[in-house]
Length: 348
Image (cartoon, rainbow, N blue to C red):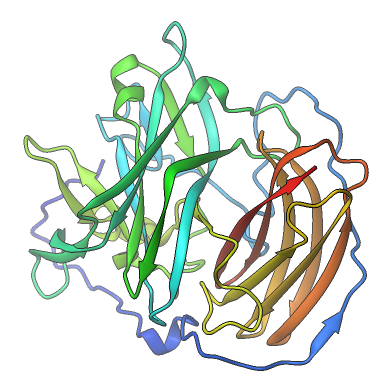
């Protein structure tokens, strides 16, 4: 891993909010009807490795792979165990977060029964992160107050579905509601490291979404005697713009079509919910974007994908036939260059 404290001067590229495509304003658009072209994933097949493509619709995915660091945690990875991805509420929205979705790249289990990863929901209400901006100083905003936690055992991650990328969902014990507040999702693999196991998390190509999340939106917990947050870009230089694949599950009562504001440039309404045999997916984008809709089951299998391609700012509708789907919990996830919005629904 690159040495944290360096005497070399580092030029930090600062992205202005005006260039972030995160300006979320109320808009009124005509509704364009679309016929869903659903591509059902192949049946479950054994895979030695995971697929790496079509993660954020425009790029391939990779795991930071240099010696002693990256989005890989556990056995032989220098004791690094924890990162956080921030979500800034630039439009002063009110919304609820019910859980998180993590895209796992690989697992290696040496312990008897696997080990737990802890996912935490936290406010960005601290200002002690280490970063190079104007310094370096320990005065950068970072995760602070922990609001809720959930966990999963890496032994339960299913990496045998073709194209499923080892998607793992967690539900927080209660929904936390944000009102003009910023939050972060924290991935803590301390127990994985202690057990001698290993887990990897997918990340976007360098530069993708850097105008959205960027260097100041991802943190790494530096494993000092007293651990402290640091901007990922300061630890990994250019690799810090790679966005880790951890996403919020947003409560269905918020960020719907026609409401005020957008979550990462997106609005999403999934109805009816619960549903017996079909679901209508209505989404809105506040800028031109390349859009993909995915339906994912509770085990992390992508059961349907619709590539909508490049769409103008506006509102769009598609209907998915679920008559062949088993009853249970599913997730609708809409992604574009500006981010990802995911909501849960039930098939009865």
